[in-house]
Length: 151
Image (cartoon, rainbow, N blue to C red; front, side, top):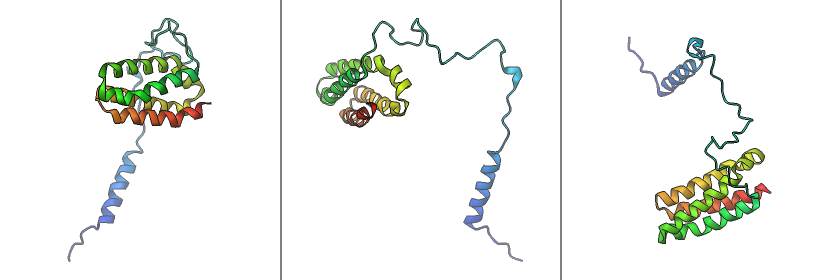
C-alpha cells in the first residue's frame, strides 16, 4: 500500500487549525502577583504640577493659531533640513512648542485627527534627525490634509 503525501491545501488547513486552537486558550491572571495597595492613575484627572512632562507655564494657543505656526514651520522645514541645520532645529522647536500648546485639546476634541497630526510631527522629527527633506515635505502635506477637518 502506498502512502499519499499531504497536499499543500491540507497542510495549510492543519496550520490554520493549529493556530486557531492555540489562540483559544484561556487567559490566566495570577492574583498573588498583584499588589493590592497599588492603584492605576485616574486618566480623567490632570496633574497640575506638570509631572507628565508638559510645560505648564505656556498658555495654550488657539488651535487655528497653533496649526498655522506648525504649517508655516513645516513649509520651510524641507529647505532648512537640506541647507541650514541650525534653522531646521529652530523650526522643529517651533513645531514642538505649537503642538504642545494644543495637543491636549486635540486629544480631547478631535481624537480622530490625532493620528494624522502626530504622524506629521513625527515625520518632522525624522526629517531633522535623519536629514531627510522628503520627510519634512510629507509632514507638511499630511498636515495640509488633516488641518481642514479640525474646523
